[in-house]
Length: 116
Length: 154
Image (cartoon, each protein chain N blue to C red):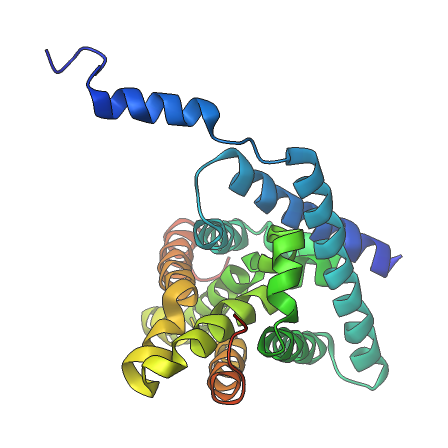
């Protein structure tokens, strides 16, 4: 059941992104930015966590989840250490993904060359 | 006169071009994005459950699942497979976190020949940079507004 829900929620989010891409003249970069911003706003409204409870990986794999972890980090540190936590917390949970992507990006750039 | 609908050659051309621009196959693209994106998320859920079965808590299992998907996305980009998938699935492969990795790895590979500093390192963030910039801005603002409305206790 978890797998089916992840499939349905994740698939729907991707299909929504594709519709946005096809029906407007936005680039895929714009669509990704919109997803991240929506993820952040839904998190502050308390709506993204219920989506994760329903969809599991279907909600945590799409890039909107990047907005969720940035915002959740900011909110958690804000509650623990006051206003400075707002800055301090933003990358507290998103850091691993960014670090992994940078390190692997560099490695792949060294190892592989694009075809064509 | 500028308030009228412009009728110079340039805007006539833009109107005509818009009429003949091919319509994307909406349904085909929608279904491809749905099934490929859904499949990636279902595979992520399988990984997540496997990590939980090993005794990791939910948050840590989620973090490792994300790292694994980034690694797979980066490797498939290196092998040239992820970009073929992207041509087929569009947002179905771009929206998942493996697509975020792809958006960093693909320009890193392409611009390596233009140098490691201003080529590879600078171009890596051509898509991921905007995602991070607007993500941080949105997180900062929405957390701040939430704080102003709810106070710390909320």
